Structure formats: C-alpha cells, structure tokens
Length: 292
Image 1 (spheres, rainbow, N blue to C red):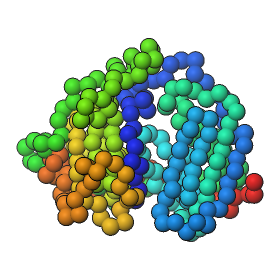
Image 2 (tube, helix red, strand yellow):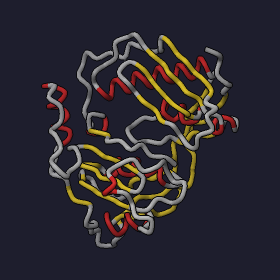
Image 3 (cartoon, rainbow, N blue to C red):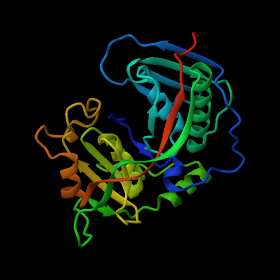
Image 4 (cartoon, rainbow, N blue to C red):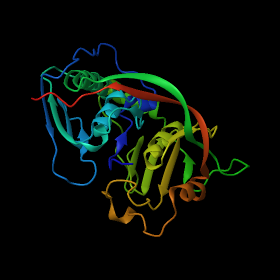
C-alpha cells in the first residue's frame, strides 16, 4: 500500500465533472522512443511514476503497477489487477517513454492520451493481454459513524463550486485561485502517509483516496452528496506506505489513532467490512519485456 505525497488539483477535470474543450484530439497512440531496463538496485519499495509534458517516466516499478496506471478510469482509483505470474510483483523496472507528438494541454485529455500509449506499450513490449470482470469481493463500505448522521468536526461542507472554477479556468486560461495562507489549494487533495487534507472533495473521491491505505476497495455509501473540506490525521501501520514527505508539522504521531479510529473521531465516518461487486482487471498473458 503506497501513497504519492502530491497535491492533486481539480485541474484533473474529471474530478469536477468538467468536460474538456472541443477540438482536443487523442491522436497519439504510441510512444516514439521507449527504454525499459530491469532495476536491480535492491532498494526497498516503489520508486515512482511521472507524467512530464512529453513522456512517461517510471522508476523501480513493478509490471502490476504499470498495468494499474494504464487501466485506471478515474482520479485516485486503484484498480484491482488479478492474475499473472509472480514476477510481475517482485521484479522492478525503469521505464522512459517519449513522444514527439503534440499532446493536449487539458489535464484529463493529456492523461487519457498517456494511458492509451501506456496500454499499447504494455501490449507491444510485455505482450500483455487483459480483460475486465466484475467479482464479488471483500470491500469496505464508507458509511456515517453516527446514527443521527452528524458529521465529525473536521468534515465541513465546502463553499467552493469546483466545476464552475474549472470551467472558468479552461475558458480563460487563468488557472485556479491561489491557496490562502495555511490552507490547501482550492479544489485539491493532498494525501500523505498519515495525513490527508482536501478542499471540496466528494465522498466517492475520498473513498478512492483512502483505498490504498487499507487491504480492500472502499465504496462510498454515506449518502452525502455535497463536496466537503476535510482534514484527517492517523498513524500508518508499519509498512503501510512510503516514507513521509511533507510538512514536518503534519507528520503523524507514532502513537496516534489508526485510520479506522481517526475516520470516526475526526470525520464522523467509518469503514464497515462487507462484500460487494468490484470491477477488476484480469491478466490473461504477460511476458518479460523485449530488449530495447
């Protein structure tokens, strides 16, 4: 279970339900130059993924993580990728894939283009074949902790209209408003091991953000339909995520509450173990990558 210590702004327009401007095409379908090298560094954990303007970059990444990145369908989602040989979880690779084609400047269109190219890279270089299934699996239902439906002190209805802000940003190119001192950027979520602070997040998005910190998918069943400002602090379990990379003032205490307890005390929410239909991706075939 891993985390990216990054701010994800609502510039990922799909978060806000904003369509990309017309006229943006998804023309590029393959990378022009691809380098894939085994990573034998022996360093612990996961290196990272990056999407610079004209390339895809991954350091010390497993094939299962690459598949997950290529087949996610919405921000913060963690696809459950089932099947495949054991080495797709134990062998690591560095990937540098570049394109000379012009990519969209609209974030959600750009990411869609990147994912198409990454899927084609996996098919060509790893001979990957996958299919979608829906299976009944253990999940956590995100529900209200109190019978009266009262929210916790750190879950407040947001006064921002992120869809309107995003539409204005796309139309005039001015970007989203800057963050006020001591507050997160508008329409963003900053997950870090043991600390999450969000501006105008839906419960469905919150469920996706929290899923990597637990052992199963989280499904929103709170019944809350508005967007909320939220702040959550907990002590990660040993090995739960990557090392803390954030404001030292927000480093979680070593003896703080678990995520399950923090959700109830701080947000008035809880995770109920249950079973439910989960969309999964099944690996039918994969091979070690062809040489550069």
